[in-house]
Length: 262
View 1 (cartoon, rainbow, N blue to C red):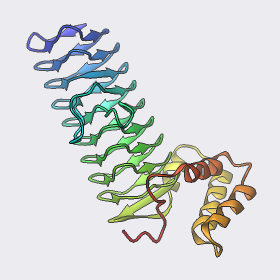
View 2: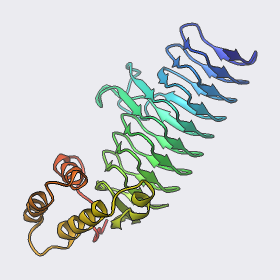
View 3: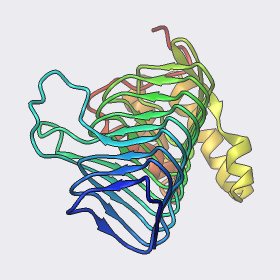
View 4: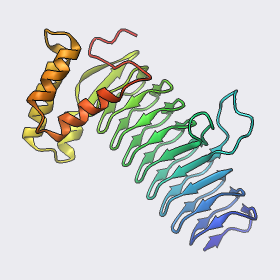
């Protein structure tokens, strides 16, 4: 363990084999697992757990109270997984009692400078948040999602696994897994083919996803019937079924489409 003499670690903080640099502040209730590095001027406050081998850059604030006028200081948590890179000025807030009380961030994420994870968000593994991404409360982000610089997500939105959101996009609706969304307001522009190829998805899987996407969003029948056509035709495709499960689970926000109009 290495703790710089100018750092403040309050009694009650739980520390593994960690490195805490100059002028950091680790509050009561924090739990840092082995391999966590706080570089300089990092603030950890409240009930925060940070997984092993996560590295936090200067002026990040993790575990700040939820930015919610209805909160009166009730107990809540922020849980961050292992192997994350959290760059300068990133903020991640604790949850609210109304939203389940816990903000969760998965493993091996890359959170670039100035990005924000609000109260009660549920963020998956291997995500990338580019500079200045702003994610509202109760948002759900799937595994391997990529959020472009300065994009903003409305509260309660969902972004599916392997989805891509373009820079400066304003997201007010749910984005299905494997899709790409751009614009203000954002609309679907197809599948995240580049990302899927980089991650080694097979050609047949890409073909099935493309065909299912065309039926869902460009078919002649009503959407409900098109959904059932895809469900029957591509029942053997785990990836297409993941897309349909995402659609079935929607309840808070409408589904984003290629002809999004605000």
